[in-house]
Length: 319
Image (cartoon, rainbow, N blue to C red):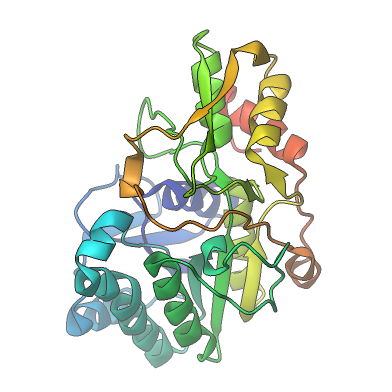
């Protein structure tokens, strides 16, 4: 199976590449914006301007993939508010152009979305819960979701609190942010050095509850969507909705690290990805039981995910 992938240089994309190439034996064409990828067996790549409809169409037509997976996104939320047109072009227009190209070839299209399409007031959201985003990032994701679900072979893969390793960057350091992702790895990397870990707990703009999801497992679900020609909305997530405190303390326990070094602290003004002052939903727990049933996939508990993460961090192997 040949997959046309956007966002392959990103965190989730690096996990998708490993799972697709090593576990499923797929071939992948990575459509890149600027950053290059290291050459690998069954991986080809080229620079593609996602906001040019003709360029996108020509690229997809040349590759002739069996499926398109679109996970590239505008990752600086502050800049998205400053230049909404540019963000829209990357988040919505590019989705439209890639979708049109997939439709011409009549191949499956998987769009990677987010738990931030919800406002955080509805409790655990399942696949049928109506979206109600609180920020521009969420709005753009909802618009793109609507485009994708209008295609007969379109699927939306929502992820939540994604954590793991960035396989495309050596000596990668996970940074805590006002979202939920990266908390486990940031906790491990800090406590393993015997340093204090300041867990952000106060502040209005903070994702306090979510469903932590091991990145490789989320990508496994995406590949099952493709292989099963599944369509509609899917929650590619873990089995448990947890608080930030739950995540860091259970991570410390699983890795036999000193939890006395964990302190609750104010939000650091120096955040990655430009999330300062952006409205953020407080509680974005997802319910993925329908997805699990449709795909025949067992959702991982947080402890099961941590056990797999431990192997990945210590041995560099997928499990």
